[in-house]
Image 1 (spheres, rainbow, N blue to C red):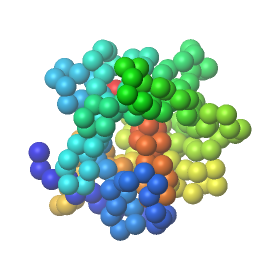
Image 2 (image 1 turned 45 degrees about the horizontal axis):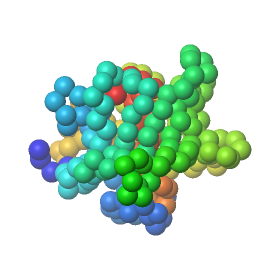
Image 3 (image 1 turned 180 degrees about the vertical axis):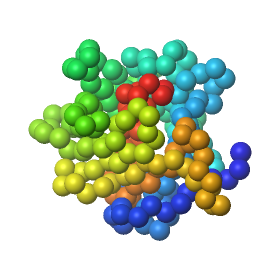
Image 4 (image 1 turned 135 degrees about the horizontal axis):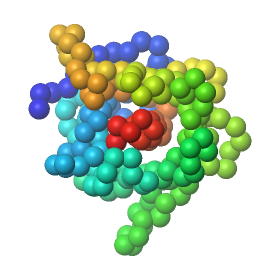
Length: 201
């Protein structure tokens, strides 16, 4: 695979990272390929700007499973995502996984995501009151969307990937750019949830 060089995206805050992301000009950038590295598997793969695998989702079952696991490059589970409820009451519960050396990983409830009107989604932290993030642009046929804070400030942008020559790649190759202060793992979890919402994972 050729090296991946993200294009800058304007309008994001320039701050410091809380989760060790890959920084370029005050922003953090990843490339998300909505494909699994496992043959005949479902999932997605997240790359750093130099083309190295950073994170992955490998769902060995059918698309749209009730539970998926977001892992680092060596396969250690970082978060689990479970679909709950039916139809208009459906939500996705996201838990953080910790590893204490035992065979079973501890999963701590973290946040939940629900669809909203006008092709959006709202994010609530576990134990918190009200919406803390919003995802705008959850159309099934579009790759572009944004994650905003409660104050409306955009904290992350997802768009179709462009090469350095300006060629737009397929709709399953995405560029994720975010302010370095936002929790990168939270945003990456939202990218996976959005893929589950639209049955692309």
